Image (cartoon, rainbow, N blue to C red; front, side, top):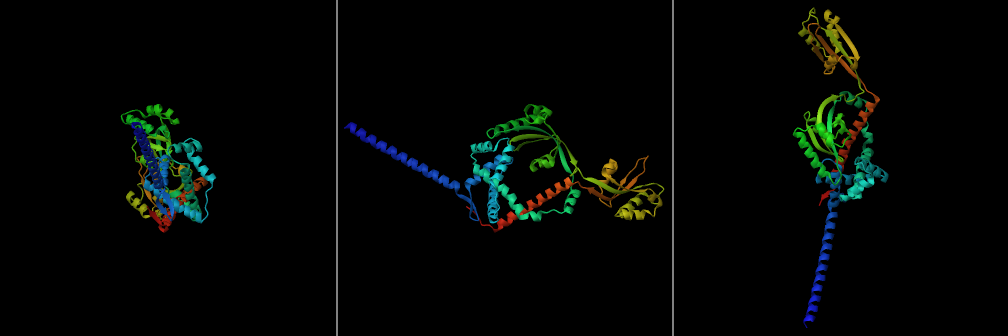
Length: 415
């Protein structure tokens, strides 16, 4: 009797276990299905085109791998909305991006990390980033350029006068003399390398010699020179890093800076202005008058005469009334390379029609100088460089306008 009860009780327990297991499995499957549904639910619709939570999460992870600066969800979502608008535009005008073009873009990015495209994709997969996410990002990045060129190329034409004006009126650029400590990182040891770089920076702030520490830790070819990079144009640096360096003090340590797959500490050694275009030959036309005490006018009166004359022709006409001054007048047209540096320093600060007073010492007379004109001979290479920059600048401006127009006409619904 007791054995029969034990059998019945055992059967009941087994039934309860099986029932509990079935409920648990059903519950797990239901929750998994709900999670999957939530993941692929839209976070926003753009003219009935969906941007899902999953796509937003994937893109955010990808960009935080590719970019040195952290990017917010809001920024990524805005980018995805722009892409939906561009996709719709490109379909309407039959603008297509080939698979070959995407493969080329993928290879370019992978090369920045010194790996092949396949290895790059495998590494991203370990971070949970799918190949579809990468190819969609690259396709849309190329698509933006194609749409802008399709829509605005004719409007982006730059006239020769615009090129000349840009070169002639362009301010000098800046070069920075830098030293660096460079440490590469992989996907799995980024935080470890960041901690090491922070420790190195603390040693430097406590008085450690940059050159010695660079030789010990840096993995760049510059390590053998104590990290010395030499003079680097500011235009070759990422904008945010360039701004940090421009506002830094001499010998200040900047960083850690994450650039692609490396972490860098910089030391600013020196800074200097350089011409915007190295191959521009400037011809200066100017008047010089050596002042002598035998003149009818005092030095102050002669200065006023120069200041009242707004160009060289007027000045020469007025000086005819003063024989001694007119006799001491010379007008010169010469390349800036052939003018003595002391005089060139004055002329560089003048616009046409302006004057400067170069005071002499006991042995030399005081000289008054007026700039008549400044003409620049622009090389073909510099002209083309300036033209391409201006085209790019204009296309970027037009692209912003196009996206703003598309957004204003779109139906964008946030879920």
